[in-house]
Structures are given as C-alpha cells and as structure tokens.
Length: 185
Length: 282
Image 1 (cartoon, chains in turn red, blue):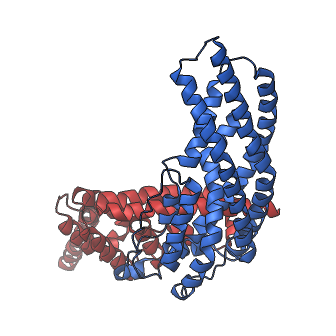
Image 2 (cartoon, helix red, strand yellow):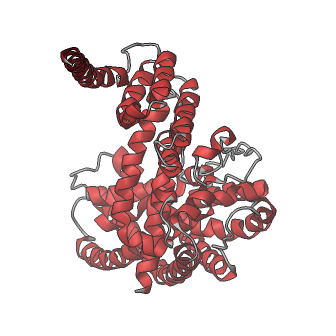
C-alpha cells in the first residue's frame, strides 16, 4: 500500500515537472521562432518569411515581415523583387493570412503605376469628387508608396514616371470634372 | 496692365488648344472607335463642342492676325527709341517718339479690346458645352477608376508614332504652329484617344480661367486707355508697357510651346503586367 502511494506521488511529481517544463519552454520557442534571421540575402529572407508564415503561430507577424522585406529589398533593388513580393503575397492569400483584396491593395500600391485609391472608388465621379481632397490625399500617399516600390525596390524609373503621369493627368481631369459638376448645382 | 500680362501665353494658348481641337477631334475620334472597343465609351467632343471650339479658334486667330502688324510697328518704334538713347531725354525727337509709341500701344490695346467681346462670347459657349460634356460623359457616367482606365489606355496595343517636328518660319505664330501640330495628331489617329479626357479638361479649365481674365483685362484696358490719353504728350514709357509688349511678342513669335506637352500625354505604350494580373485590380 505504501509502495503504491509512493509510486503515485512520484508519478504526480513527474507530471507536474513535465507541465512546468512545457509552460516554461513554449513562449521562448515561439518568440524566437517567429523572428526572421537578420541577413542581407534577400532571397533567403523571403524564403524564411514564407516558411515562417506556414506556421500558424507566426502568421500574426505578417506586418513585421512585410516591413522587414521592404527594407531588405531596398538594399538590393531590382526587377526580381516584384516576383518575390508577388509570390509571398500569393502564399499569404492562399494561407488565409490576408484577403485577396488586401493582397491586391498591397501589391498595387507599391508596384502598379495606376492608383488603387482611385480604382477602389465605387461611386460616380461627380459624387466621388465631392470629397476630392480626401481622394487627393490618398493618391499622394500612394504615390509615396509607389516611389518606394518602383524606385527604391524595383529600380524602375520609367514605371515611376508613368505613375507620376497618371497622378498629374488624373488631377487635371478630376479638377475639371469637379468644376463641371459644381456648375450644375 | 498686370492682368493683361497674366493673360499671356497660358490663357491665349488655351484658346489655341480649343481651336486646334476643333480641327483635330472629329477624325481622331473616328479613327479611335475600333481601338477602344474594350474601353468605356466616351464622347467628349460632340458636334456642338467641336463647333464652339472652331468658333473660339477663329476668334483667337482673328485676334492674332490683327495684332501682328501693330506689334511689329511697336517693336520698330521701341528699337528706334532705345538705339537713340531717348530714355529720360527732353529732346523733341524723343518726345515725339514716345508719343508715337504710346499711340501705337493704345492701338494695340484697342485691337485687343475689340476682339474681347467676340472672344468672350465664343469662350463662354465653349466652356458651357465642354463643361456639359465633361459632366455628362465623365462626371455622371464614370467612376474615377473608369477615368483612370481610359487614361492608362490598357487596351491599346500599338506603339505611338514619334511626333514629327514641324519647323515653322520665323513669322509663323504660335497658334498657327499649334494647328500644324494638331494636324500631325489627326494623322496619327486614335492612339491619342487615351488622352482625350486630359485634353478636354485642359480646354475646360483654361476656358473658365480665360473667361475670368478676359473680364479683368477688359476693365484694365479701359482704365489704361484713359491714362494713355492723359499721358500721351509726356511721361516716360513705363516698364509695364514694355513687359506687356514683350508678352504679346512671346505670344505671337515666342519659343515655348505647350502643345507638345498636351499632345504627348498618354501616348506611351502601356506596360503589360499580365504576370501579376491576379494581384492587380482591373
């Protein structure tokens, strides 16, 4: 009887130790595991981010990864960065980390010469342009992203110039349409 | 006088844009029809707009031709005045020359003043019809995204032809030069259709602005004419007068030409990004 009691006590102690150990180890492992290894190798960094995002524990780190990858890509600008980002975004969409809409928004803001903020406006021009200043502010902000994406990350001056042309053309047309719509009121 | 200066190239050239479009848009739109099947339908230049632009064009041309002679005369007089060191001189010849310059200057203002009512009337029609067209075709029918699609010309596939340079003679005015450039545009056909909203917007905004300035100028000319009559016999030539003559000369024979900026808008071949079509919003 005494032996049985001693055995049960021993078992409980082992279980308790195991639980304590598990509790002590888990957070430390997760925190370290989700961080990207600092490196100048952009390919490796994208691969690592892609790898980590497959783990559900790290998916909340997507915004940090995005910032880190943007920063790293600026250190090695070139056209290949576009494909790297596209692949990562597709994987993130497939894994349900971000929605397709969010993926398109991110990609368009940085790499599309056209303006996502303009495309996403569903109302007629007369109605939309009642809030022209807000639209212009969004376009200006997006032009900043495009500068980052096209000049600093892709090193594609022509594409950025195209975005700038869109910006100035759209501004001129919107100004005129706004005046024309106001004339009717 | 200051407002007269403000009219300078920008506003008068905008009239030229209007004139030029009258000539260019009908054939340009006709050619563009087939190339723009996939794009939102847009008809910014119906016959009424084209007719009003044509009228504005004619008014601007009349103003231009009416001023050539008087500006050339003024230029000669000013050269003679400067070459004889007449500044601050009481010499009888210099006084006579100053008087002659003022008289010619007054003549120039009168030519402008007589052109203004017709110009204002045709500009008014242009602004009204162009505004109606922009409001109806873009303001109500299209979202901002539709406008962007047209400007981007994503469905256009052919390369733009390099713009042929048109060497004008020394006496060829800017407005006339503009016409020859638009003739080149018409020959190139529908690729320019992508830029029609920009052109229409530019004409509309410039027409509105020009209307505003025409009113100011007319009032200003009235007061200047009175001052000139009073000062015809004495007084130095003012810097304001010299600057105005300079502006008018720049208008008629100047070097800068905004037409190229306008015509080149939207002519670039669109970059195909089919590889990333899933990540781009249409």
